[in-house]
Image (cartoon, rainbow, N blue to C red; front, side, top):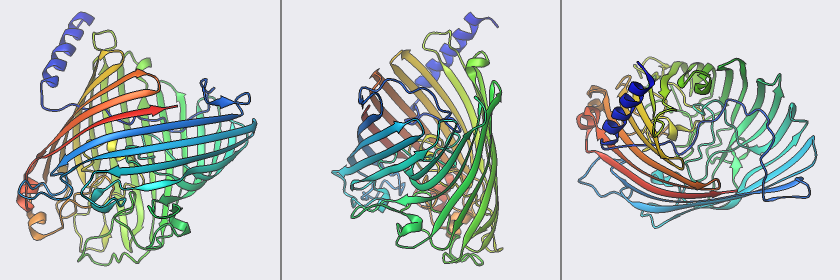
Length: 482
């Protein structure tokens, strides 16, 4: 097949998919496993020969949601609403010498015009968190090896297990110590120990280990993450992550661990959680493969969750092609995501994969209805660029629960769509299909606009277990970054 025919086929597929009821482009780009140090770009907010640099970000987003929580047209709940979200960040980095860096970043987040309480996590609210410390750390050492201590963001791989969750209005940071070594120009390793920061709208945000959670979970999250590009065009990652949590969970804290369902054998929320996650990730560079790309991630977990024996598995595989020489530069990408669920809540074991601290918004539909837990999820994405500054994306995700004896978990990894009633356990496992349409326009480097519409076609699981109406989500967003 010659290039002309390939472009014709790609254009035809694009036209067909763009005529459907949904399209989507991820509002958060995928990040490399460990960011190898590169020469910084010129910053207009740098002074004193680059020793003092400031950064700024302001984001404004209007959202409208219908049936996203109850899937019930007959009820006008507080979550069937429209509202305005605003986030402002300002940071300052001081680097007096090459081996020493100080960084501090403040953040102010607000939610306006909503019916639900402006309390972070309450009824899915972003809520208010007046100006607070988002990051504050000291980094010692040259770029090839360094130690970073203090409040900081942690992001690894594509952020399926560890990420900043930046679609959320306040995102995620950790109080952490991190050692970074660049073993070569293409390989690096990180070792870290951390505890997640908990948002408190009334006072200074503290981390989980240091009284940041009223339930005193005393959560410690640590790991080793290795990445190498020595086998170009493929990047390989290997990681070992450990989580120790003395007790308790909080449904308002994104990244909390799954609480075993009521009636399960054992599994008291007061019991210790202690388990390890071993995984690997592979990602090919399409620029070095003539437009072809493929990727995969595989993770295995073992240990205990709230006193239950944990044994769980998750995987992601995907592949696609970039028609870079065609008009509109179409990109077609197909993927499949799987994460195990607990098929028997009475056996004293837990088979539910624990999603840790991910950036789920960009992986399982933009309505944030699913996490990497108890799912089969095939997906198809089409991205086109009608103009160099405009990107249009169609993204379709279908979802089945691995077992209806376990819950359907939302993007925060803990909130459940339906209680595990006898009706839910006897329901069909097809949850539904989400179609997302997104337009992204970036006229200049520091300014971006985005608009999106998502429709969720409710599946038999919902109608078998209660209300089963479709859900909708729409938004417009503007962001300025320096």
